[in-house]
Length: 107
Image (tube, helix red, strand yellow):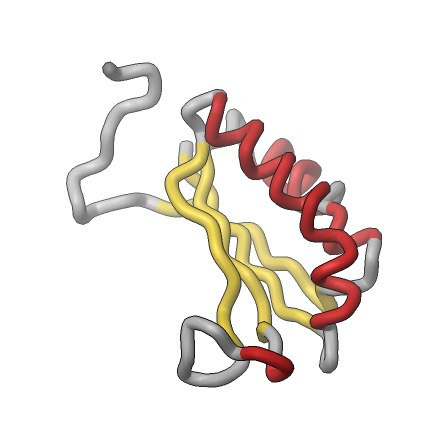
């Protein structure tokens, strides 16, 4: 099943975010290699794809996990959590309606 991981950054998280980013991206790339990642990205703190020093206000990840517990464990082990980037992380089941989802394992 798909799960949405919705994280909110602490204020002024940019420096911590940049330091932990390589490890954070590696975990996302692993999900992608496994065909489990639907989308992932940060929320710019301002209305611009390149927010500069304003940084980001959080992140959204939609990925496939076997259970809510597995999704929560994966989210809790994120390097952004350990680095203090995220002040909270919400994990919820997600049902993709549009565009039509590609079934896991389909080629």
